[in-house]
Image (spheres, protein in one colour):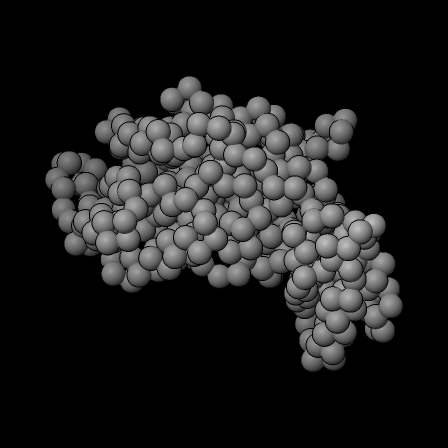
Length: 359
Ligand code: ADP
């Protein structure tokens, strides 16, 4: 490490990018810096993709030359313009240097290897279960490809900002909530690239007045790609929970998730099997439609805790579609047991957030 090296900040990066030919500074967004790794996006017109590729490379080369930069990843993004009223809701103005949720004791990520396994549903119900245990709880919807928490929680209003410029998380069902869906419509045709996901989620962690929380549940984007990896590497997680259905394909994807967390040394708190078996909502008959038990076997094989089974039940879907809490005592109890098991495995001490930026 060189002495007297100037701090590596978004401003330093932007300043250096001014020297890149054909690159307008306002096209640069989502600069994220962590331990010498710099990622940023260059917004372009999709028609210009080919012409802008050399500019992208030149931008990477320019930033690589800054003292203290270990690696650079610039991506071209084509973001279709949101309707005017949505643009003014866009919170991503510049990279924040505030610490990550400093008064939050535990941040738990809920992940899945693929979409559609009920990850968001499980994240929401775990948050409710922590709340029911008497824990002050927040829920951060980082699944920005399909931000479903505003719908599942029944919150639509645009959050306000406080005097310090922090976004105030709306409260519903006793939970503090934050979602990109409050700023971008669930169906908005926005293309999110890895670094932009990372920058957006970082901002939702740093620039939100989370206050004192025992636990913040993060609903991660589905999958185990670069976006997820960058997220889990840069957020001070107490651990991760993996949601899978019992099917083979979902389980092999869940295994990839497990390996991703292991690779970056994030403790895997366990696997939850969702849609484990079917319970008929009228007669209560139970049926193992997807050869239930696969997640338990995977957990044993991978040597991680198996946390429990959630049945496929109409009450679960009805509650999430209505933005309501679950009205099924047995399933609620299962979620509470899972939350209690998770709680006992969390480290007693507060997770120490990593410094916001490499200096
Ligand atoms: P993901 O976040 O993995 O993409 P979601 O949580 O959005 O998946 O769930 C997909 C759909 O499945 C939603 O309509 C949700 O209500 C429904 N769903 C999830 N888990 C269950 C369950 N255990 N029983 C019934 N429906 C479920």
